Image 1: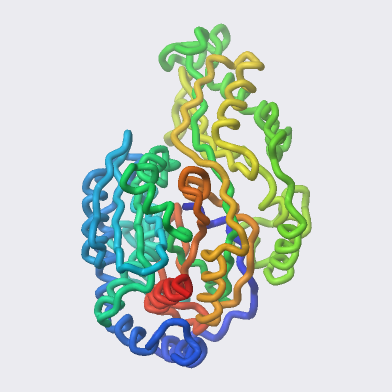
Image 2: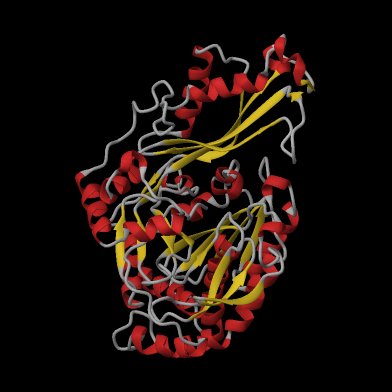
Length: 512
């Protein structure tokens, strides 16, 4: 799941950093909610159990990080599903079954307590690839270290999404330790291919045993850790962009021109170059500045922002910091030097064509005088309502063919449609209530600029509201030194135990 393009909610001066335990002590009076006022009954007693289980939850997270599933590399595919099923059973799910697909298997589990309402929860357990040389702490050791936010676990998958998911499972374990049942029935659906675009996830969701249970749910969320590391603010997203992940490949074999193997570069004087052909094909996909898709018909179904969406974006712009966003992302300008509010409108409303990577010929130290026989461009294309993945894949192929690039292959690895969820839906209103209970400043965001396979839930045949929820904080998804916050030194930002309590609170809110 993509996280790095989420604007933060607000920006205030960073409070003076104190010791971990002083920060934890300060958390209680600021965020405490009395049992008389809380939707969660006997909340104080539950919090004491959650605190007692914290180190056990940390150990579970560390062990899971040390057992990665990497779909892009075919690593630990069956083992990852087995591990996920065991975690579900140990958290109290009555059933936890592995579901086969045409690709990697997934897991679904049920916890039926006879409640009148059912919540669906989505887990991804695969992680992105990594280069250990780029990390200050080994990516699979899951070390506990201190940074300026407090005590964190560093490791691949720590925040995307294993830390938040362990916090959700911790909520179920705490309820069981307290002798309580969850206030809602829970259907858990998990996949090991999210990081390659969820190409087979729909087969899990539409399995004959799974589909009716999902359809009975009032909504679904993916556990997350949304809090701004300074202010503790959170966004409630009313949708997410869709995505297509693919490769464009130009080669001498397919073209019928150029070499069919790498040859000496001196021959370029008389032999065509497949890599230059790839560059020419890529150049047709966007405007000259690279900022606007130019694929034929790309915008014909794009839905403009509604008045309400523009209103929410304007509110978000007033409560967020352009300077902070630029600093965190290492940028000094937005496209066309747009002011902050207009840049946020563009972020929410515009489809994109992005080059993730280019691979051709020799890429090591120094030079190697070759004429490569093959070039590959890795692309992602973000989609907005009312675009669809199927429509856009067809338009990309037709666009290239119309310009004579019939030989340029398109290999689609995965993707899904955009999602939209009503502001009035139970899943959104429960999020707002749970965040209020935690004292977290909250704003509605029309659309997450990143992507997740929520469209599998919001579209037919499942057709339920979908979103993300979670207190706590982490960062570095898809990047070196990914981390998840365990003990917060900022009283506005929850650590692991606060994240666990957030999941308990939202279950009770949904039950109401």
